[in-house]
Length: 102
Image 1 (spheres, rainbow, N blue to C red):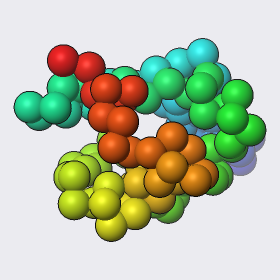
Image 2: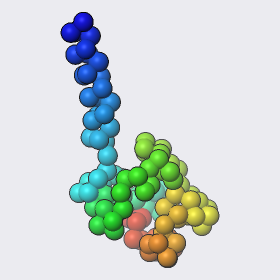
Image 3: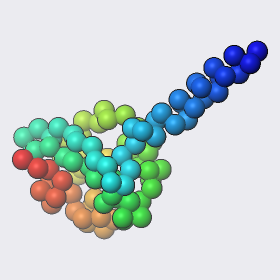
Image 4: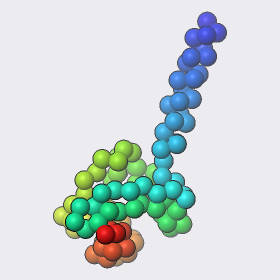
């Protein structure tokens, strides 16, 4: 019985804390391929400095896994990054070079 309890606790700990190691919090970055526009490096610190919390973007408009294939049409439609980067909530998404690096 004690072994079963230890296994259950170990699994719980891996689930509860394992995903935190993958988070892009303050001081961390994650890189996305950006096609011809150039790669995008998401900076957790810049967003934390803007008083944003992970829950402000996750799980919507972004899933927790790095799977989004964001298009210019998505930006214009106010999806993904364009949800905030509209020139009102944050700098306008038309300022491509602020995120896309060739």
